[in-house]
Image: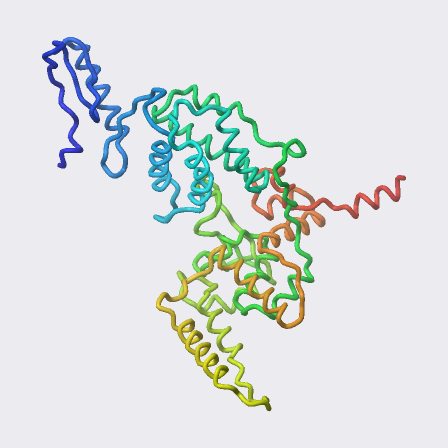
Length: 412
């Protein structure tokens, strides 16, 4: 066993004539040497020493005082914890991106400050910095919440006194209309006309993903990981149960029903092996290369100059390298590549003379929620979108204004 994993020994401090144990360079005096009280304190300290050991085997000694650790050191310790905690199937989650962005201004402004001296006014200064750089109110509140979570973790690890976190809790979030932070427009459903207009300008794989998400309202991450083995095709209505989803860590189960139209979209993709992802970026890339060959200029009447021939050769070589990259295409889409594929379709439509307003795939979830609410009510929309609470569904399902207009017309 490495020496660093061995607990420090109980020994006699001759100068003070008492028992002592040294943890990370700090002497802890335990009382009279050999007494039951000293052995009890020693056992307690060693238990805390083992409990505070990090995953890489390095023990962490906790000293909760005002001048025990700097903010920059606290951020580093929390980052090591976060990298091991926020992961799924051995891979880091998107939460780490948000944590890094939230802690960056904290380190820049107060990295050399003692963590025990970090109070509400300093947190407000960090928040004002995020306002000044143009972030929206919702993003700012989320980042301030992550900073508070850092200090909450530090209190739990006894790195700082509890009063530090209690003081930061007094800093309330920015409210609408009472701050100078930028406001963003709420996410609205995308008109179905725009959804249909983009389909000819994307690959058949991406078109199937768009149509399926519009019909089911599932999240982009749930759509991207679809496999034949995750779909129960025995009943009249198929049931898709994602292998991973947003609330799986809460122990919730997600089942998405697939009706006849959704089944028709999926059938061409179900012939592949059961554990293979349905929607492949490699297939989309092959379709793009087959359907968008380089323009040979056969009908051109003007002469081709040497500079243009050189440029064509460069484009041909670049296309060859792109079609045979050293890093092959991934086995499936993710939320980012799926969104980029839609952006590519919008760009291709613009080149063809069709200007389609920008939209993103998350809006399709709002489409589904609004449509179900209009026909079947808020509870049906809650079930269709898989929300645990109806108040969350209110953000996705637009209220039926036409019904309110009809009531006003009839009742004055």
